[in-house]
Image (cartoon, rainbow, N blue to C red; front, side):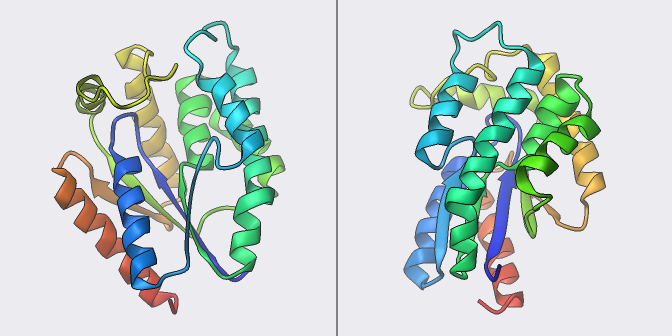
Length: 212
């Protein structure tokens, strides 16, 4: 595949979704062949799975069920949307990918990072992004943003206790160490403009280095 697969990660309330939506629009205006998508979701089947995973009423969901649902949505999204775009030499910007599962289900849920990695290697045929931008923010600050934003959907993960979100952050630290060659950090505690400019500079430099 000829395109670039770039993913964005971070804990709840990091603000990455707002930043990359604006960024995708600006890059498209400049002339970059950008496709913006998200996980879980991005295509009809995966969006239906997303609704099941994040439904606040599904409090009885088992951790392994959750991990398998994420992997299933990921597989369908990959073959239906991401891979075709990469074959067309597009730059795919994806809001979350495999690293979320490793941090949330593998570490924070206690299933085991390697076990969740194995599930996802089967689902993705071991495909990984070429670059991952991590939006770094403390759990309290991220959750405070969610509480202050009445336009944002509140999902099942937002309702977890604070210690769960600390485990997610710890999980991300382990994942970043494992894949340090493709991770770049952004200080997401800054104001929107600063986070946006920092992210844009990272992406444009990376695109230029890769001949776009």
